[in-house]
Image (cartoon, rainbow, N blue to C red; front, side, top):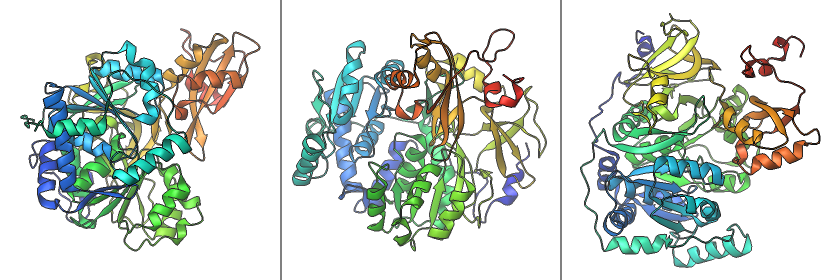
Length: 559
């Protein structure tokens, strides 16, 4: 497809970016530390960590992994934490030493965690103690060589850290009892690593940096292999896009989305690392009153989030009292930004909520709206520099401008493939190197892309992917269920919610009993919000359940 979108680029945005400025994420880190050593890199729970301190602590963690555990280059290191200072320390320590980071959602159920750790082949797990009970349940069935456990206050300083840990453990009782034989304390690991200086290995663009897990049409969570080249490319692409509205060494970005999510990982952690910014980590963004209070104490210049987060902030009465005079960039992604939320955001903050689009498989950014946009435009934006997009029909033929088809993406940010699943990789890659996104879209004459629908049956709950097959598998394991189908339905709070259609084997099965069963095998956001019992489900002539018909009752012939 001709790059018609280039004519709509704001002044100063290049058609292509320099992919060779950095050899690896570790190289990016070293250069940023060299330039901004005395500036604050991360801030969390009142504690500031400078670029220089981050350099020293991450080098100790790298030394522990390399010099104490003697892990070979390419070993997989699983990180299972919310937004705390330990995350960037471990992240950059692992990447600098040539290891592959496997990000794990702390809210995983034992079933989900076991699958990801087993599939990735992770040998080391660093976990916040609040979630250690989950790991305890699955550890005997895994081949993990070392577990490292950290507490919320571990990097907050002696006095404050001790107080925070006491409150979390004894007052709020947020840490279930756990026992992990052979586990080591995070601070002890850093201490041991200090005496074992790591030797930076040769790491290049082709080396894997992350196994970032995502689902698919089969519902089986797969690890997208994101190389250092993929990550550096997307960093450069997105940086080129937002650079005109930001200044090096003078930014403060609010990071409320978890860093284990690819959007926050690239957009907040890495791009703003290059900018020498202060990164304000919000550990619990669900506590909106505390979040708003933190924002009122901080002169922030940028904030990213999903539609539901922005909506929740706007609903708090004290949000309008915040000083937004320093805010220059508000970026929404992960799920569709609703017009009502975007318009209210602008009315309150004076800044346009810029919508972007991406995928785990694209590191993640594909399209971003211009930061010079003056109002909400119902678009996911323009393809970013060094990116090709193509709108294609079901047979793979490219459609002209205005045609509606599957959005396909090609560029240096597209993953190397799915870990250990070449057949799944082949399903999503075209012969000419495009990734088939599964999203149905159209492009207008100015190059702006608008999503029309999702070709896949994936459900998007507050920016997180929920795959029907996974939900159905857990629900169907209940002995009282005969048939089941899951779809997404509109929800004013989360964008979409999971609705479950069930044909009962046991007439006495209740909604409450089924949901309780689902909670044992699914993270909270995947648990169905609505359950509808039916006598039968619509099917094809070969017996496949028609989710499409469930989404469109009018097409079901009166069923």
